[in-house]
Image (tube, rainbow, N blue to C red):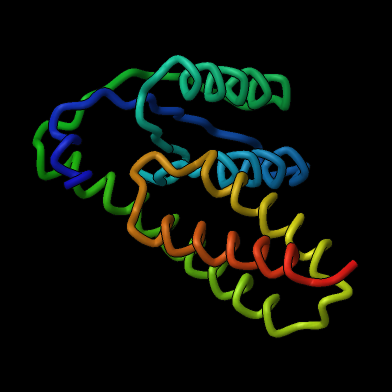
Length: 162
């Protein structure tokens, strides 16, 4: 199972603190962290599975926090137990699974909609799928369901006469 692989893996952590005012940097950081799919460990502490890409992304965000007048540091860490590592991975997997379910539902709704807007809907579904996959560190079964639903939309578009 996918979680069996997460026993003593390294994680990259971002510890940060930003001033309350102005709120724009806090909102921008929150949006970027959400787009990365971080696990929230505590107030001002987030984690991602460690690799060169995630480490670089959190280092960039740390620099932005400092430019906004805050404090930030990036850490490499390992959970103290396999149970903690699995729980962290499960937290991230569940969040992404919910997004895949929404994507699959949107694809099924697109099949029932007017075929005139199907091409635009398919493009949006594919963009949304790519956005979710970028933060899918522990792929859930719902990933395949969403992929199949989006491909069904693509197939139905091929069947519509031009």
